[in-house]
Image 1 (cartoon, rainbow, N blue to C red):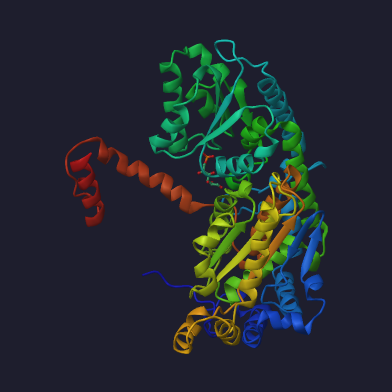
Image 2: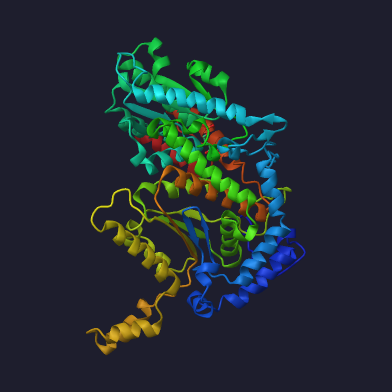
Length: 558
Ligand code: G6Q
């Protein structure tokens, strides 16, 4: 068994500098005083609590007044942030320092949406960024206007993005979220899974003569993507297209020009990005090509502008008014001091239905680390499981666990004030549910309230006493609510950048590198080792007992 991380254990000489530090210890002591106070009581004590514990930026409101925090908690968290040199880390991120220390490179996604020149080791990378944006604009215009014709002279009607992880989740989430902005009639599709079922189901209704494939892979070596890309090409040729038609129907997005050429795509049909763009931070780069093809370049640039506005807020706002900083610090409070192990993302906007999956990667791949920047094991939690579904669906499924389960779960509720489709009273009903859930999670329902409710019902006295414990809701769950005017490209860009920076803030507190992903690399190696074993019919005894058993069962029944 691996050592368990326990942030609540008493001080001893094996503790890391972080958990030994005065700021951490002060928060530890503060926790024991606060845990007895229900959050709704804090509203009674402080009439200004909502104003004091919420932040505005443009048309975005972030309300963390329902979080179990006091002014003292925030002051102690800000002391922790200063102790961990937060301002300096933010500056280093924006100035192209090699913050990704294990891969010895910068993480300069902010340059992809910057209006000002961004320097990386003496080079103005904004020039390269703008050149690729111009290339994307020209191509997008040709496809959307119908000027680019497929091999039989018809315009393109369908785009299939083939990529996985960071080369799929961001573009797919944004394309879904901004569906109302898709005006050209071009239909986007996303294939990520190596399971042939996804490729089959996607291609089956498509006409190869009007389909454009975007092969998206930073490395252009990823097994899933290359396998899907080869099969897509075989399908394309098997349907009657010729080798020379590939140039009109396949483009690549990558950092690896040689591998793109080797696959058979003319590097002239390649959209470049760079090693200082991490996969899960890449939707702003050429990896966003399917977004631009779906919604047009003006909307794509509005998405970038929204992200840039949040970047400027993050870089220039004092820590106590800085939304990503405050949300990151509150997450640290929940995870390291309140024992939260799981985080629900609950968008009350159907267009955000892929947002939880996107954030799952952003948060869990970035901060799912157990070794700090100095190579030492941590003795504190560095993240939670992230999951979620759009409201109100989740209310009829897993919210029960949030309200009355034993697990300690935090939640972000997100909702637009304006619906893209204001049908009847759907939107007020949707938001009534959103507000009611955040209220119930904070206030709960105590014994007195349950008793009162049952007394005014027809339930017998005997049954009433039996039911009371089952109907009590403890409340005091850590909830943040984000409201915004409407889910438009700029607002979405702002929201995504907010979460990117929140994840970075947490990593600074935890002294970990959020920009590498050695666990993902391990997965890429392992499948390659087993594959040769599946290419013959002899039973194997080469692995552990379970793995042998699984392989041999498969061989028997395939
Ligand atoms: C993201 C990760 C990972 C990556 C995929 C696809 O930050 O590194 O999700 O995006 O493994 O990699 P390629 O783009 O290189 O195919």
